[in-house]
Length: 222
Image (cartoon, rainbow, N blue to C red; front, side, top):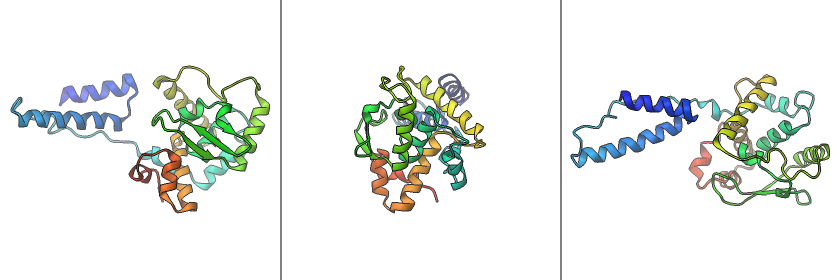
């Protein structure tokens, strides 16, 4: 157990792996060791007394209406790449790195739509864009170089890149007085608010790019 606990600590500290992912690793390892016991390769499962790591549930929190007002207020969050990225997360529920690698060609201004291929699923999704977000996008496009193909980031995408941007936006939210908000909270907020209005989890699931409704249900909070 000591060796396994040391492994858990190392992968979280050195590789920035989330506790939920470590728990998945350990569940698979426990299953393998259970099979080894059944086949009499080992006498006992060394993970029998292993306790699952605690998971921070704050990542599943939904923003309040007051917190959303703070984000929408241009006097507190002025026009710029950070504002547009956050508005994308709030109004579309798209994951951070999929937003950061968006290109102008992904956006259909005439039909108020965005089409992209999420890195996590590899399946094409098309999402409607609100008139508010379209207006903000047009203002942002006018403020940046028109020759730039990417909206935000055109470098190499890696796990370290995602961690860097995640950390950056936590600091941005703190600067707005939202000390316990991460970018992923925007995805949970989008799903919850969408279902509150549409009352159809299946549509929300398709828009979030989920393969099944069970995953979507973990994003919806009352």
